[in-house]
Length: 318
Image (cartoon, rainbow, N blue to C red; front, side, top):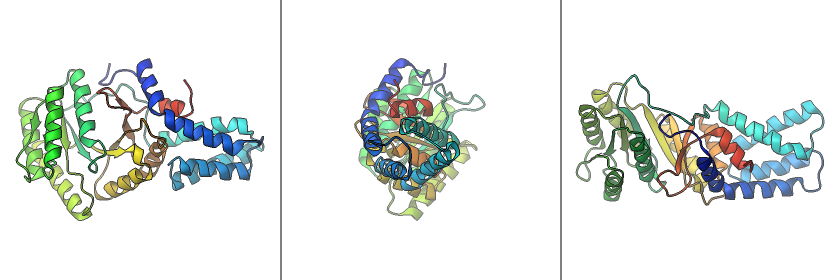
């Protein structure tokens, strides 16, 4: 069994509950769009386009989905509104598959080297440090030796919060004084982790977007220093986004992808919001796989993203 275990019934129930508001909003809008209609025509497609955009799927991704449905309607000559949900479901699943988002519920660390290094980026307030804590917990539960690096040295609260998570989970946190060079913290963290034969290293970084050049230079320096300790580090650059902010999360994703290569995403706070459609748009536009989704405050409410189960929950399939 891998790190996060199989996608069991409890996880599916958590996913269903977490996406409940999105699902209810999504389908109430679709129901209104097809009310009194029997055939999928231009008017229905225009209504569906508005539904997708208002569900935070995003304009470009919405246009792509509508075009695909138009092609199917033209090919099949006659498509009823009762078939629309099934077609929409298939096209959304296909989009997620094209963006390298898999159904890997049982992901494990690579066996050819260690430690596995995750560099975490994202603006302040998106749940970045909490996501790091939850990841550390789940790695620890899987029997892995975890080190955390507090490289967000510009905010005392960030270092303090990471240390609280380290104590809660029972993993060491490498830190320096406020205002220290983040690259120096990364170097110390990787050196300690390597010396202690750690399995996983997760490094927090500053979440500033007001100066793209400064952010780009800082992240490049952190990466360059990491390679002095471990030539292949980082193994993963994970962007954390707050799903409840909808299109604002998409804008953050575009800005971060412009300054550094993102290899995976974690989308948090999907519980209690009707903006879950943003997962589809962000994945499609960035061509970066969504790896984790946050569905609550609990330690185990961070799940490996499963596109099939996500689509099932989005469409109310229990």
